[in-house]
Image (cartoon, rainbow, N blue to C red; front, side, top):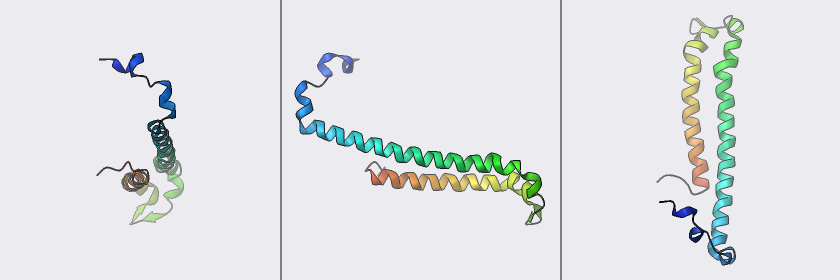
Length: 109
């Protein structure tokens, strides 16, 4: 059951000289670079989300002086504008993540 913890499952000293090891390290660096791009995308999405979830709401009184479709902009952003922004963020994130996955050969087929 836990065979991957035994000494028999660990690679031997000759493993470091094989092409299999080189492929393993190439895959590892590819995965590290994939994670870096994914993490950066995630941080960008979280900043945008934070802006629409909290920062816009902090300026609701100033935004209420502007009208949008007959409603004060602060009310509109709280009621529907932020929700619309979240849906757009979700679709943009999915598309950007798919591009990153395709770039590194990890896309779903």
